[in-house]
Image (cartoon, rainbow, N blue to C red; front, side, top):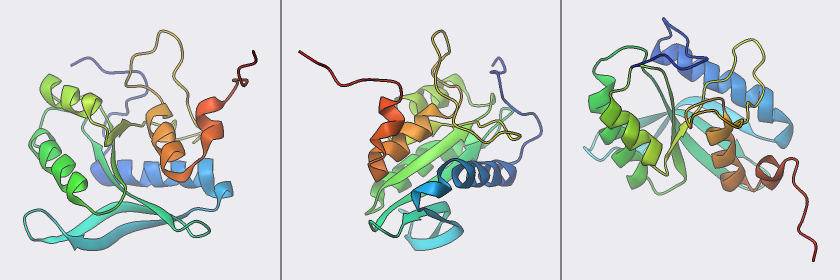
Length: 170
C-alpha cells in the first residue's frame, strides 16, 4: 500500500496514542475538556476488563468519549484486531470512536475503517498539533478532519464543521 502524506514510519501504537492525546489537548483544551489515558471501563465483548486508550470528558456538560487509537505502518496483526475493536466499541453503552492512521492496513480493513461511523482517520503534524482540514483534491484519509468532525458531533462544537460558512439567506 502506498504511503499517504503525513504517515510517520517507525511509530508504535503507544507513540500514536500519545500523539493523539497531545493533539487533543493542544487543539481543544480551551473547550474545557479533560483527557485521561488507559482508563478501565467495564468489560469487553469477550468478558475481559476493558481499558480504553483515551477518555475525553467535558465536565461542564457531562459528555464523554472513549477513544481507541490504532496505527499500522506495515502489514501485520492489527488487521485482525480492527473488526474486534469496532465491535467492542459498538457494544459500549457510551459514545466511542477509533482513531487510526498509517499505511499498513490491508485494503479490506482500510475499507472497513473508512466505512465505519465509529472510525476516524487522524494524523496531526507532531510539530504543530493544529487541526488539519480536508482540502480539495485530498483523499479521505488525510489530516485530522475526521476526528475533528466526530468531536464536533459528540460535544456540540458546531463551529468546527461550519468554519468559514455563512447561514443561508433567502
